[in-house]
Amino acid sequence: MQTLQNDVLKIKVSERGAELKSITALADGTEYLFDSDPTWWKYSSPVLFPIVGKVNGGNYRAEGREFELGQHGFARTSYFWLVDATENTLSFALESNAATLAVYPYKFRLEISFELVGNEVKVFWKVANTDKKEIYFSIGAHPAISCPINYRESFNDCYLKFNKAEKSARLPLAANGLLNHDRIPTLDGTELDLSYELFKDGALVFDDLKSDEISVCSRKSSKSITVRAKNFPYWGIWTPTQGGAPFICIEPWHGHADYEDFSGEFKDKEGIIKLGVGETFETSMSFIINN
Image (tube, rainbow, N blue to C red; front, side, top):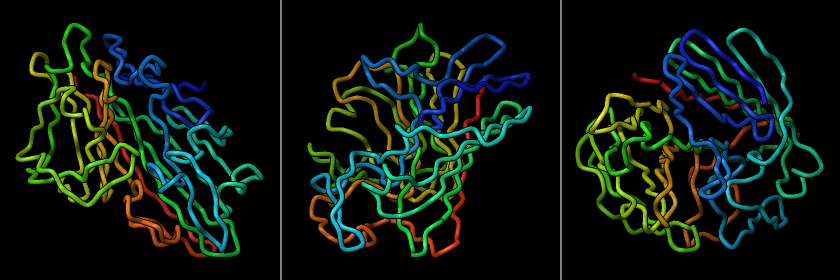
């Protein structure tokens, strides 16, 4: 486990998955990330790569072969090595290897870096094509935000605040974790009150949000945290369907789970990213602590 600290925040990052495990405000010790309690979910903020969600039937076709790949891919369970550490930054890397090539036929290098700037945790992703052919992938974030942030409050005291007014319908998930093309009106305005009932059928998935910031706020206190992610075409919002979990996931994605009727090649998935030989893809997101 690696740590990084400034005058405002302290973060912890695990080499397993280069996963952000903790964001703590030094002023009062408030923890803004879920603690990976396996009663609810064994992660805190995994990176989803080289897929987001599930592929239809657990298998996909690429480069003339069929591969089996579990939900959200392998990055979240792979061990990264620490590339660099400075007073304000940490950088990790994962490269393709025999284990990844057995389930994903492309060579790559994935770098994940963290930077502390005041009350903000910046996260940078860089995917490099190290193969001799085009590669295809999706990538996304899955941070579990403490909800409520103040343990004396309840999940129902919380709401999401969008930085732009939304009029959006979600893409529903089927029981098998795949999307269908129906749409269910969900957002109207800049706020969404939270309740466990809202997630009884699974994650809320959006492909048309105008907002690039979503904040987890409370009706009873001023503490909040903002997830900022610019130019991400898809967002997911999730808490376990059984209810009762003390967190809400705010998930910016490049890519999404397969539709139930999708049976094409991996390279033809909606939202897939293509990289030419020697090319790189870079994006970033951040967490802003508002006390």
